Length: 310
Image 1 (cartoon, rainbow, N blue to C red):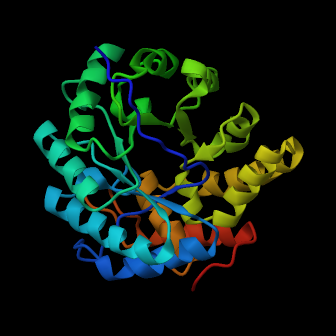
Image 2 (image 1 turned 60 degrees about the horizontal axis):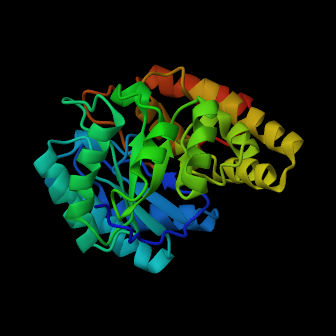
């Protein structure tokens, strides 16, 4: 028999997947986190996602992921930001441990990738996996992280949400990092629109707003928070023209940044050039940008009208 009780989850809006804070020697740079959080809060961002893809959670040990999560948990007490912690992308015993740790540190929500090696072959296998995570943190809202380009788990999210229903009392929605908005629309409508669907694709935020996605987790917010806010605000007001204009501006910058290799590394570089925050380099296997690439990106962003640090 399914358990019909369900956790309430009322957060809607913009969450930023924060970048991993590393020093030049690739150790954790935890002291930067309060300044990072304040920068985001000052720019109207009231939610953070920790240890996600952009945040290089899978490049850290379990202990390091815990330290980063704890630092953000302590920081958001001051900034009053919603704290979502990504716990997947590790062996199942570690995922369970990270979920328990997130709950202990009073995360507002938990996000979880699918199993990345013994991949679920259908929605029922995915639900069974998420049940285990939900049982580890039964009082913390749980969301599934749908990112098929990276995870190679390409299950239909409309069917998944129609199937899961009340199977997991703590389950509240998904992060939908896909450009398939037909599928995204079906996910939004699933089970009488009971689940939150966070859009995760930077380049189609305005299109997501147009089909009713009122919440998003785009990594570009780290560097362009005002631009992203403009897209979302205009889109949710129904001002499609302004939303598309703001989206076009963002996409021009993203087109430049994405030319320079791995997305996390390129975005970190752009953040250090344009904002007060320097999140440091990426860890292997991701490659950091060469000095020539940094200089070239700087010149191209400056040509678009951005003020770039010297």
